[in-house]
Amino acid sequence: MKLALIFPGQGSQSVGMLKGYEGLPEINLVREEAAAVLGADFVRLLDEGPAEKLNQTVNTQPAMVTAGYAAYRAWRSLGGAQPEVVAGHSLGEYTALVAAGAIAFKDCLPLVRFRAQSMQEAVPEGRGAMAAILMLDDDKVRAACAQAGGEVQAVNFNAPGQVVIAGEKAAVERAVEACKAMGAKRAMPLPVSAPFHSSLMRPAAHKLKGYLAGVALSAPGIAVVNNVDVAVVNEPEKIKDALVRQAAAPVRWVETIQKMRQMGVTHIIECGPGKVLAGMTRRIAPELQSLALADRASLEQALKC
Image (cartoon, rainbow, N blue to C red):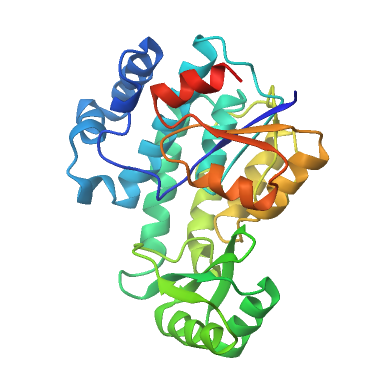
């Protein structure tokens, strides 16, 4: 068996998402570490909401890093194997880097909060949009974006027949219509506050570069497949560069899972609340064992595999 762990990003959050792991000591320890960095109100928000506040990007990003890292710590403390490879979807790449020992959890929380704030400020509310395109060839999605004009790109290649586009609101709307005309089964807007990973995020990437210059990174102790190049890099400065570029570049998730398969991975486990990535893995590489550590019950079940 060759194990990889993958970490979810925004969209998998929910109020009380850590309560599903109730009774596991490591969960509480990570909660306490997060409270020491971002305050007790942050942890209370994780447990009690309100959902509208948790869903604000500036809260969602540190919340998902906390939840994913807590699940990882719980997995390891109960005897779960250390993975040989890790990756994360978009924001989840930061959690993967924490798990790999490249960045300290206490440093990652303010980093992703800064990232979130920079992304939110890059595009005024209501000016950007994202949409999910289902059952249309990737090249046709790209062609529809080019045909739409304005700033709109395919930004998340999540699974076969599942691509997300993002950019200026009007351009995204035109691209949605073009995708439908080309035969997309569904093309629907997503309830997000910014056009993540589109070229409109370049101002955020620039700010992130400045912030990362002051963050201590180490060579990862576990191979991390990054989103932007689908590559494993070990030098801290190259990791920072990839994170900067990732903010305004597509998430190449299909290729990430395929890369893991090429590296000999046989088991891929989603580490954190939700099961979205596990479902994507089954579509991308059905021959691989795909599990999720979405709560205590699924974690304990995965330990038996």
